[in-house]
Length: 190
Image (cartoon, rainbow, N blue to C red; front, side, top):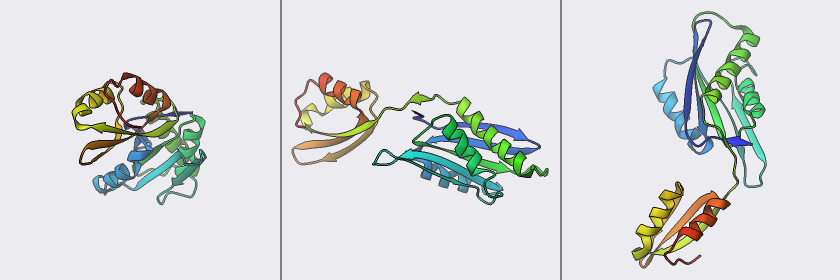
């Protein structure tokens, strides 16, 4: 299985209709979808499909045709995500109608082509199962701990500042969490 860690964009044109596609990590999907709806008010359709792992390690899928004929937009996009074995990400495609009808088959091919186009432009990485680990760090050791987080490129961090310490909840692969423990010279409570 594979995933992406940042947002990618591509544009294609099919019979004068413009398709703008975004490949987005699932944790940024809702916010990007809302932003695109506000930015592309004149778009005819904003179609999406996503696949994500739930807390039971099951793949959950959903798609929307957003007014296109049933199964002609969201499902072809979802099939591309399945075929590329992508999880924890979504594709959002904005369509501006160009005046030439594509037909259901042509539309399905166009949305699949748009999905493949954005995936081809992306840096796809192998999926690594992530865990959440809690660290309790004293204020005097905060700088060293933050340095290690940056060096290991760990970005999914929640901090809670208490009176005598900082509680970090970190989501990362098991390998990165092990490295963090190994590289952290400052003492911490687990």
